[in-house]
Length: 278
Image 1 (cartoon, one colour):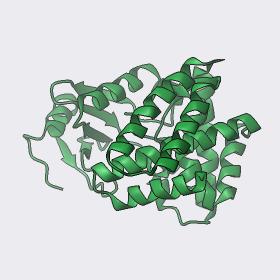
Image 2 (cartoon, one colour):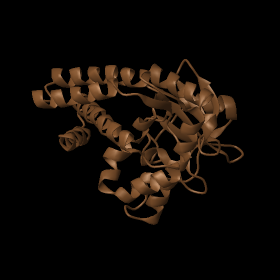
Image 3 (tube, one colour):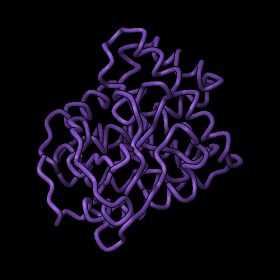
């Protein structure tokens, strides 16, 4: 990728680090840039397209990422005007590059469970109905979008509404959740690392397992076992039932976003999850 001195990420790095060189980072998202300072240290400069995502990730680094000491980047600097963050760079390889079925993949899931367990325990809140009610309200808006875009039929709409009602009437414990916790956001090396905190917020704790359950574990149950061994405990029957309802959210959001972004892979994922629920 070509970056110039007019690039807000380069300007921010120059401000805090002095002269820097751009380093190859083929697995970084397009809005992130790896740079190397004059003393050889690596950093990532990340510019957000949306102000709310920028504000969310900035708040996460200030309020909660401290619970992930040694497992997450550190915030070095920011530029509110251009929605840009400067972070220390984690070492290691993205976990989604580990060969399927390999010991490295299983170890990554074990370590991911251990690290997420630390975050959840440090930020746990008592069980109550507020988390479920808020989730159900947000879920209903996704169902409405799916109906308006003609992405689901009446039976599927009723199924999703059934799961929304379950969530709305359920008491559930909450914690600070990553909400995009999956191998593309993990790094495996000398230390297990986690990145991308733009979705992070207080939410129902069980929801943090949904993407893994419906994108990874149903085809590889040994990874689920490894994860919860690291997490410290398995889900109980009530939590497993709730996870099914979080799968309904996964289906609806994937269908709507896949349609909006013209992403057939995401749309197919939503359709697959929805078919499992039926």
